Image (tube, rainbow, N blue to C red; front, side, top):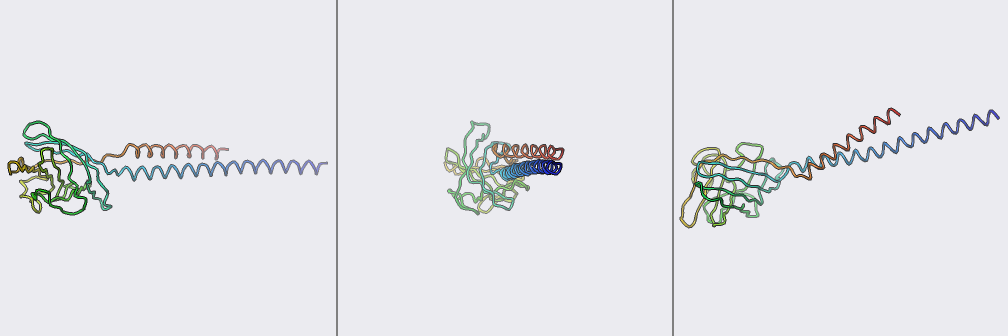
Length: 219
């Protein structure tokens, strides 16, 4: 009888230990899955946080403006602006809207009027943040706007009047640049809201895994 009871006790003890072990393994696997998803969310969020959306502002003596650019990552720290728009005011006049001109190819391109050579390249991590070709926009009135970085002008552009950036607007109706002056220029990366949400969810998931892991160790 004693032998039988010993066997029963041993079997129950073994089954109980096995059940606890299975539970811990199950929880571990579940936590591992959650952690993997959390890390994936964080990685995706961080990758997307290097957003391809930028805001920009510029300010000169006779002109100021701002807008938004959408760009593709070139993988070397530079971006190619593919679309964008904004508004500006010249000589204290009414606000006018402008749109980025996209030639659909990379590299230096000649503007439709032949007055500017541009490349629509952005360098957010360096100074200046625009190359010597710069950005090309067109206004509702059919004028061309070129904003470029560095002094000395760009190929096909007149010499820069000085300063880190230059603004020039070509007006075909009068056959002249007006205005044409040095400006300040700021470019800011805009993280996508969805990316920030994923990043937050990932961090919350890791926090939950950490709390559950502590409970298992205590058990």
